[in-house]
Length: 82
Image (tube, rainbow, N blue to C red):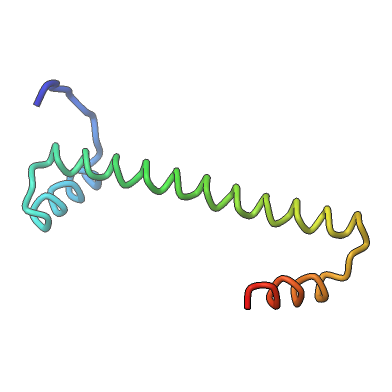
């Protein structure tokens, strides 16, 4: 390890960290590293989902502005894939 730090955690966090350390058979420092990595991945996936939802909302808005028949548009798109 490159760095040594001191953390102030409550009993609940310490117990969970020790439990994960035992379950995963890794050090407590590695538990923190893995949890940080999982949090980062979760955050980036959340951003991706938010972007997709925004894109769908934008598409719906544009379709409504053009007064297009959405069902007809979906059917045309499906037919073009075949």
